[in-house]
Image (tube, rainbow, N blue to C red; front, side, top):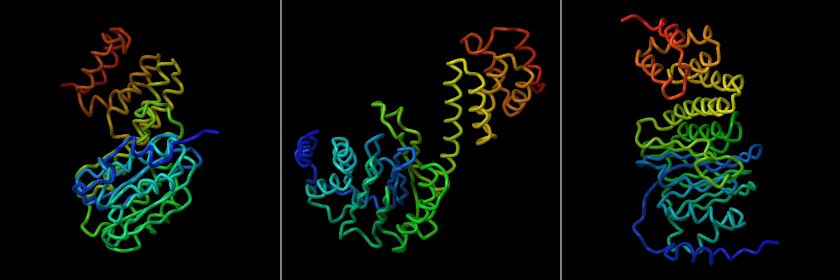
Length: 329
């Protein structure tokens, strides 16, 4: 059986000054931390009337847990909470240890969920009303300085009933908060981070979504738009991976999924066309090239540069045939 250092001992080793008096950062907001028990994915989504909320509130590590730290925010709850969960502490144990060491816990609002699905939350007695949290099965919703005291429960209900992957359900929770009245001050920024169920040891490889809207009149709809675009590019990236393994059929399936999600983006059309033409399916590629070249002639210029980089056949007849579908100047 593994033996772990007491939580407070770990805390003292990592950040001796944790909980010391310092100027508070008033990131009043609403957020959700959650585990997808089917996939193991972990995520945080947040919105606030505060610039760049994604820089302070959300903390996630694949295979470990997720943390949202807000109200008069102490950012250290993020990395310290993850470290405690990483060495075997449950979310509630990690949160309790950090609260005991924090002289200003009364103004903190923090939520954690671990990779086993244990969730915990704390809303300090001096958090600005309306403030509260709802801890469910594998997730927690929390909010402070809200227009109504019904925001966090509405978020929970939306999350539990929404369809789709974890990221979609996290966005649904944010949308429910807005529908319920949201932040009493309005809205400004939003963020979402979702990581894989199993960590690779390389954090950037584990992130499925990592999106931030720093300053926007409608941050949640904008975050939802970016999530849709991110999904399309994820399919494109998978297609590229298949191409490096010479699995053209599988690559085209992924490219087509990307094009279906974001059909108006020339990038989503150009590279599948390149793949088709490079693998002998020239006739299938021509309508795609024509669409891209019509949208912007510079894509035709890019195509001509690819052979030198080894990214397209060095075939003059093939190039001429494709460029023939470009609009005449």
